[in-house]
View 1 (cartoon, helix red, strand yellow):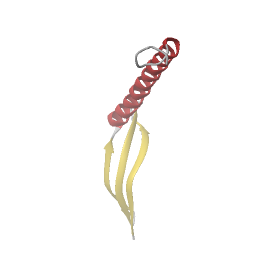
View 2 (view 1 turned 135 degrees about the vertical axis):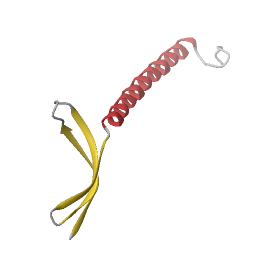
View 3 (view 1 turned 45 degrees about the vertical axis):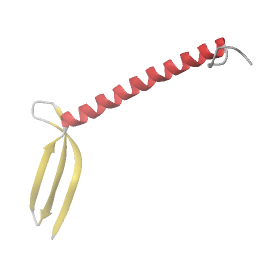
Length: 84
């Protein structure tokens, strides 16, 4: 009987003590496992870096919008600067 394993993400510690993340796919047939393991450690790190960068840029944009809003509130209407 064959049991498939598809895209299972696992964390391992190598013999040198380094933590890695892998994706494993394959199947189990009787007492034999056939398949592949792909190291995705670099990809996971890039995803984390991208997430942190997006959060940083979102915070910067929010701060800029809050500053512009405060300026508009102090100076009056945005168009023409004169009140009607």
